[in-house]
Image (tube, rainbow, N blue to C red):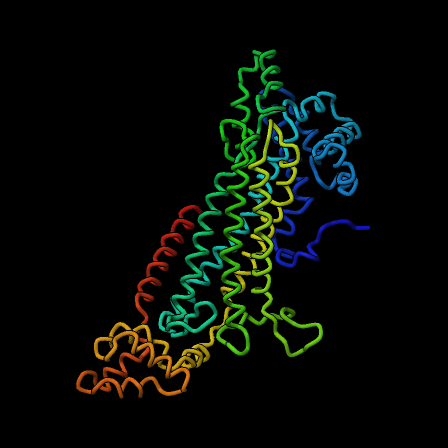
Length: 468
């Protein structure tokens, strides 16, 4: 039976780039890449021959291994690297590689070095597409914010109609959150570092080997630096095997990404309900259909953003729990708990970014529906304004204004008429009253805030371009 994880029960990331870049196959290849890179570094420093490096490079191909068999052997040592090394040595023997190749393989390293560093490689390779999708999302949201600065809509508080706002500011609010998540994730990507410390973080075995070979004129620190560079990782200068903060930092950035996108998706889900009708997802062939109801067009991208947002919190909790209970020089179970939690967080964030990019760049805005929904609250939607501006003109002040608002709502009487009866035209003309009742005149600093967020986006976009 084929036991590969295709994501059939994880639609938030199934079929997205993360399905390949964060798969079991990708992780095994990352472990092989770390082992092969280490032997190349040794060969460059004279610790082994180029033939050794070539031989190990030949066996460092995931296609040469039975991953089902590897998984079955993984519980024997509680990690996949231990049986993988055995398989690599078997392949070296099959290839007729020199005996020195087997000696150079994994020299001075431990399973945690390879697994932690391989996870950093998987993160790096997946975050490349994740950040690209996040930036597509940001661009789409920026276009919505700019294009709808003057589109009036109702703001909702605790599910109820509250005050008038603009859809441009609503889109800018989504943009602000996603921009923050993108910055945090980009920073986390730039900090992905090599873990290299040997059995207990002292590199004792490698140090002993080098001390017995003074003619090599190198140091363990120099070798670690070269290894980090060859893998495209940061050289932290010291092992972080007992310091799990690097894991919770990148995990937090992934969770923040999922949260920001989840909120965007939740708002679209509400606004795309037929009885609200303010937004609709892009229509794409083969997407959003129902198995039983041909007339339905389900908001699948938003649903999957919400799916990711509901799934992520437990995973980040696992990472913090593992980090906070880590003991000794290799935790007894906590370290092992990180792997699947971090990988799934990565897949959820990457998948969510992929769906969000499609949603943000293809979202349809129904301005007439926004206008109609804004009218549902009548004149009462600017009652906060009345309480401030008209209270001095009404006997009883703010409490009296509140009573008029309540009466208009309960008795279905026009608030305009009630105010007209209470306030003389000498104190407030009809034109002045109409101006106070106009929702477009009570938007506060929405446009200025939109400008601020769009300026932040422009500055951020320039930083992307300068790094390309």
